[in-house]
Length: 246
Image 1 (cartoon, rainbow, N blue to C red):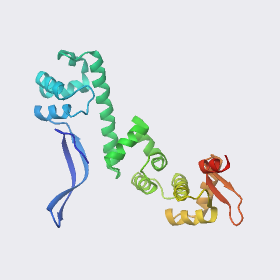
Image 2 (cartoon, rainbow, N blue to C red):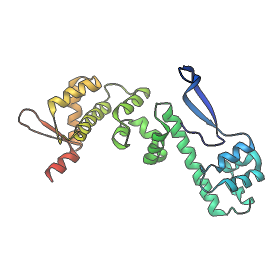
Image 3 (cartoon, rainbow, N blue to C red):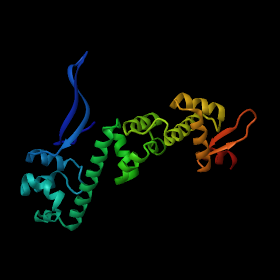
Image 4 (cartoon, rainbow, N blue to C red):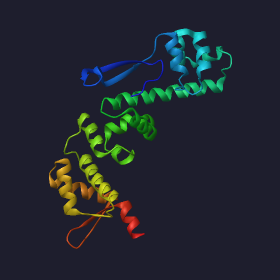
């Protein structure tokens, strides 16, 4: 992870002995703690994290408000106009940036507890905004389908930590779509149904009847197309089917 200059962190993890570098603390999770010193706060605000506040303005704000500046940004931004050079437009910018960063921070803390890196946490926030945590709690498998770079395995790990059942319909559907997308990436326009079912059983270790149900649901929802083939039914991602028959 990367920390903002001046930011203080509460770390959770364990000590390990690296063969080359010796004793090291391995961080598993971390929580950001607002810096308590004026110097730390100045670095924190001047780091570019808050749009509307640069190093010079951070210095002026801290000089005027001292350690109370963070509480003022959080609860009483109108008082920022006590510092020369800050008008209503800049105050609105700071207020919005502060709120946005708080949301991102909440999402990052939630996701880091479920094995997602900060870089992906920012991508997830950009996709879903303030609804990110709600979306993930309801269906973490959306991450595999909608966030570039996050695959089924990562989404499945998050789902497990959230207590989603191994035989959940959402999990089976996501597994099917993952396999079809993987085959499409390899150059296959469609995939035989019998092989798709076998791969699903291997991937998600689920009863084949559940796979049949999920395929029917995906077909009904228009997310896949199933056609009769010579030896087995052919299963397409809808996007691939449209391209093939356009």
